[in-house]
Length: 440
Image 1 (spheres, helix red, strand yellow):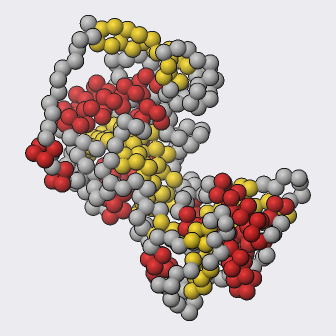
Image 2: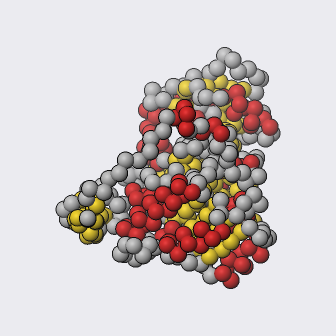
Image 3: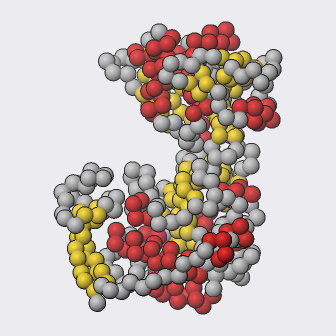
């Protein structure tokens, strides 16, 4: 026996309410409430099995599925867990389908793989496969986008890995609504998750991002899956960065770097996002994004403001960090930063979050302001609101990594354990100011 009730769901973020709303209280979207009828089963509850963790579940014995690629396996925490549901998001054209097909090919070497394409024809997939040199008798392809029909095909071949490209094109005939809609998206993802867990089949769901830069339907999708990965990088460059935002089977925040070539995506083990430049405002830093240090290039342009309100524009760094560091420089160095526009950029299209970038950003701003080029200098450190320069984790490893790339001169926080003739130590932003004027 079932009982029907009406709910209103925000078409933008997935917020649910028993009453109609004109403006979504979560995402503030107007006229986004869509009415749906939900059927609840009455007296249908049954007791499920319970387990004693020490006797029945031994997660240490789980054998992960390996792709044989160090960067990819490390991204997932050592490989893909059977039954793991992975969500891959990114802008159209960034390379999601290319990567998914390459992963499918790698896994097909150890077991059967089903690639479900709801957007492309068999001919289009064949053209991409030929370009990527993908050919394996264990890799199956279907263009069916009805979920119940796909489940029938899965039972026929018993794959260990399935790709849905994309999840917005798949629909279930058990519910109403168009593919990609709120109700369809929630139903499809939940059915796939349940099916995956019951049969220990790993699944990769490809999802597009919306105009705000979030995976479409984030409230309905991201909390359901085990792992969320974003494709970063400018489409105008050949660098592509995969960043793990959530992972129930490994560390989050991990990244893998690829280079887009005519034969597909190739992993880059030496993560260096720099180009040689002798212009003021260019500063190199060594940061942690995930568990490995990477070299990045921070660029600043400081120009005299001709209008009443100065601008702060940032690409690759949270603009709030730029605003805070500008205020710290203005306060503690008594410099007229407020009368200047500041434009900040991180080369390669990568987004950085490590607090150790603070000192490099400040050095970049000062370098551009005074038109002083520091040469091949690596700057590492965190800056406090009081103008102090603080130690960062794994400083010795960062310096070692930079030295391997050919850098010998450093500006770092004061640390008595790190020594070197070409290592300059600063305790606060004022000492950084003096070093830049002396070095430039």
